Image 1 (cartoon, rainbow, N blue to C red):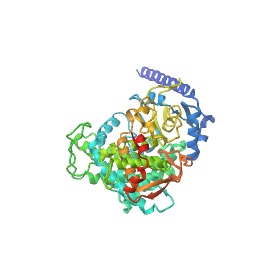
Image 2: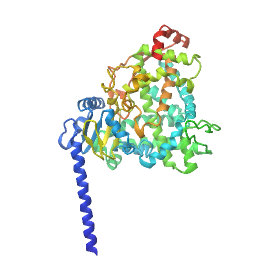
Image 3: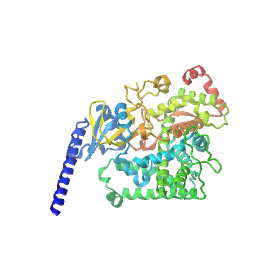
Image 4: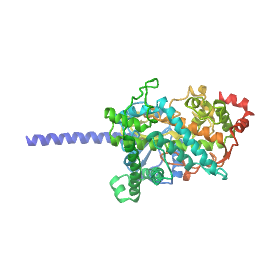
Length: 526
C-alpha cells in the first residue's frame, strides 16, 4: 500500500510539474513576442528603468510611441505588458475577470491593507457595495458644504501671500484637498496648529514618495529584507504608525454612541434619513455596515478609511494644480469660466449649491480637458486572469502584469488631434459621440472604475468657483517648461507648479471684465 501511495504521489507531482512547466513555456513564449526596448540579459530593462523620475517618465513616453500599441518591459525577472491603446484597454477591462490589481499595489499593503484599491474578489465587491451610497446625491450635497468651507480657508491663505511674484500652489492645494477628504471621509476637521494633525499631513505626503521609489527597485521587493534591514523600510513603518494612529483615534471617537441608519439603495431613494445627528461621513457607512450586518470588521474599516484618504487627496490635489496652471496660460478661457460662474450664481456672496455646480457645463468641459492632458493617475496595473488578444494580433497571456498607460491613451494623436493643445470643445456632446469609450479614462474604466469621480468633479468645481472669483491667474509655469515625473500620481518635478495670483477687487469687477466678450462667451458656453 505504501509503495502504491508513493507511486501515485510521484506521478501526480510529475503531472503537476509538467503542467506548470508547460504553462510557463507558453507564458514566456507569448510575452517575449511582444516588441519592446532592448533587454540586457537577465537584467532586462532594469538599467533603463533605474533613472531619475523625470528621465523615466520621458523614456516611458518614448517607448509608448515607438512600440505602440503594446510592448513589454522587464526589471530582472519581473515582466510587464504595457498597454497604450483604448482598444486593448477595453479588451482587458471590459471583462469582470481582470480586476485583480498587480503586485505593485502590494507595496501599499502595510498602509492600506485590503481596502477598495487593493482588494479583489468577493471582498472588493462587498466593500464597493458598502461605499457606493456615499456618492448618493443627497450625501454629495452635504459634501458641497465641506468643499465650500475648505475653499474659503484656501482663499484666505492665498490672499495672505498673493503679493508675491508667484506662488507654488502645490502645498496650499494639497492642504485644501486633505482637509476636504478628512472631513468627508472621517467627519473631523484637520487643525494644522495641532502637532498630531500636522504629523498626519506630513506622513501622508512622504509615504507616497517612498512607495514610488520602491516600485522601480526590485531588490526592495522582499518584505523581510526591506522592512527589517533597510532604512527606507524602517521609515515607512514609522510613517504608517503615525497614519494608523490618527485614523484609529478618529474611528474610535466616531464609534462612540453611534446609531445605525437606513442606507440609500439608489439615486431615486427618497427614504434616506441620515440627517438627524450630524453630517454623514464615509466612515459612518462603514460603521453602519459593521453594526447592521457585520459585513466589515474593525480592520476593514481602518483599511477603507486609509484608502479614501490616499485616493481622495493626492489625485484631486494635483488635478487642481495642473488646472490652475493651464487656466493661467489661457486667460480667455479663464474669463469665460468666470462669466459662467457669474451667470449661474449672480450673487457674489452666495455659496454654490449642488444644483449650481451641475449648471457649470463649460467649466466641466475645461476640467475634463485638463484631466485628459494631465490625468491624475497616469497608469494603472492589473494581473490578467485570462488571455487578452490585442488589436495588433499579439496575445498577452494569463498571469501577466498589464500596465495601462492612461497618459499615453489621452495623448493619442489619432484620437485627439494636436493632443497637447488645450481645447475644451473636445468635450462638446457632438465631439464625444463617436469617440472610443476607452479613449478618455481619467477615472479608469470597466468594473474597477473610480467610485469617487463625481465627488472629485464637485470638489474641483467648488474650488475653481472660489479661486477664480477672487483671483486672476497669470502664467509662470507653462505646459512647455513644466517637468513631469514618474509617480503613483502625476506630479511636477520637485512638487512645484507656479502661478501668479492677482486679487480681484470684487465680483462685480470680475463680471465687468468678461462682459466685453459676451458674444464669444455665448458661443463657447453653449
